[in-house]
Length: 396
Ligand SMILES: *Cc1c(COP(=O)(O)O)cnc(C)c1O
Image (tube, protein in one colour):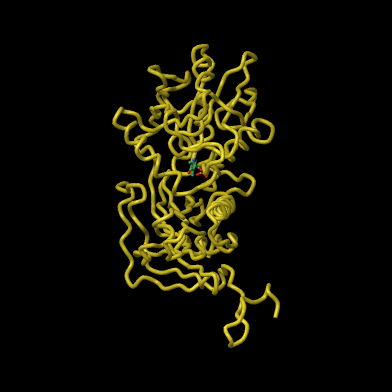
């Protein structure tokens, strides 16, 4: 008997090692009656669960249970469960789109899976093989494919979640967990066309800080942001620009990564976004924007951007003082936020120290770079533009 193969004995012989997450063990228990899908145009984000959810649990003796797809419904949790007391909650946000032939598609899903693994590891939650989780998500999406609205700018939002369920009040890593995935159809972020965001820059509260958890997708990064967001809304702003440090570096806007487009003296464009220093969430949309911008014009020309326009991509700190000075010199062409929910959101102004920083280009809609990224990303996600295998087609 060796330690790596057993968990000790209880007098009846060796135990099996804890099981890995295994998609081949999936059990499907279908809902007895299916809901009618809503009129898509009336959808509110995240308010309409589909018929089924995926769920499995972990305990240190048995490991991961057989995954199950079952009717959507409430969970049963111990009142002192780790997630309820100590916020051991991590999640992902992904979308499924309908492709040209009617098959569902996912966008770079392996990236979300890897990020979920690192988020769970950061909170000392049980580990799992995320390629098995991706197989399970594909099966869930295929089963629920009638819930993917076949309308432009609509999609099926996917929310994989892991919560710690260790039922003890003592503070320790949760060696029990529940992993589940729920789905919700969703419409365009801006139903009436792009409306540039009006943002309030905030330096007195921080979303993240050096050594903090802002580089992971954890529930705890969200709760403290709700009050500042509410205050910004009362003052008439859509969202917050989170500043950090004495030099007022911009980190993110709301829960999106942020980009600035700055005109250079030689006529080229500098496109910049804060570097991944641990305070920035490593967005899949952010990475995709950087790759598409770097490919222009050599390997792929962005829509409506002349091939003669040279784009220089920079991952670097951006301070409010720099934005203000570029704006004063007429060099600040565009500001925009990016993320799975919105894809690309133009920023119309940033309120900072009693003045508004306003980008030059198209404060009433998409500027050329934001618009090009929005169109190209949407076309890749819906399978209209093939690029680097980013869009993964699902078929039964
Ligand atoms: C999820 C998230 C983003 C966007 O990441 P995507 O992978 O592009 O969806 C950006 N910032 C924060 C804080 C986030 O939680």
